[in-house]
Amino acid sequence: MKYDITALGELLIDFTPYGNASDGAKLFGRNAGGAPANLLAAISKFGGKSYFFTKVGRDMFGDFLIDTMKESGVDTNGISVDDIHNTTLAFVSLDESGDRDFSFYRRFGADAHLSAEDIDTEVIKESKFFHFGSLSLTNEPMISATEKALKAAKEAGCIITYDPNYRPLLWDSEDHAKKAMKEYMAYADIVKVAYEEALLISGCDNIEDAAKALLDIGMKILLITDGGNGVRYYSGAGNGFLPTIKANVVDTTGAGDIFFGSFIYGLIKDGIEKDALPCVSIEKYVKTAILLSGKSTEKKGGIASIPEYMEA
View (cartoon, rainbow, N blue to C red):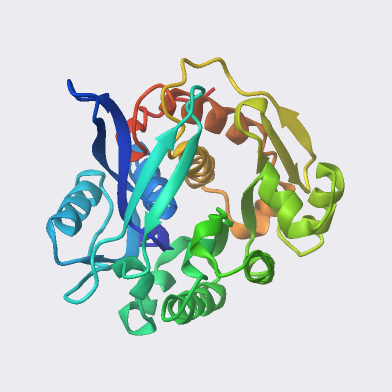
């Protein structure tokens, strides 16, 4: 295989709070962001070979994002430059515990205008893993691009990984989001979902019923993250729960993506094949992912906070 993982999805600027100016005005720092971008950057930094399908504007922010992904070791030949649409922006606010809230400027954003014509299926066929998230399902033409990529990944026998990553402001309704996130989950072999997302998508009011409902969709591995509380994991080799590690939390931006990237990289590093997924013991991969994502919260930003790889 030429690539360990190929991904499709959003690439944007996260403007993260950096304190206040002398006159009290709030300052924001420019950081590369987007869930699949963070995930690929983590895998590449750890030693994996990755490729990214996305789109940026022909502007200073697009140039910065391409440079950042290159510096992270990601193959950027799949990043298209749009002459019409601007690079997508997001402004992040942080509460006292480091948890985030987002304001998106994406309606005219380039990443949301990735089209099927931008997808080279030969690259996907040369990849062991294919990753996508729900923000590529919010609108056309990105839905068609995602469907083309998923079809190629399925036909090629890729291990397909999926992160719903629900952002209410980017959907026209909660019902639309729930339907789409659940429908496309059927493509995935491995799913990472936040606690609240698991309840939302399943329609259940407790997490164990939610996990069962999601597993019934057909995935081989399910990871349910719950912020600072810990991670529930489910696979054919057994289920379990692991707590998070103690960390001096500064910014949780990208922590979930770094968690998932760390988990996937563990499978890549150990040469786990698709046929082995139903019986592979995943506890050690979850432990390492918790360790690395915890360390990432001690620095600001997403990609900028990725730590050096180490096993728990």
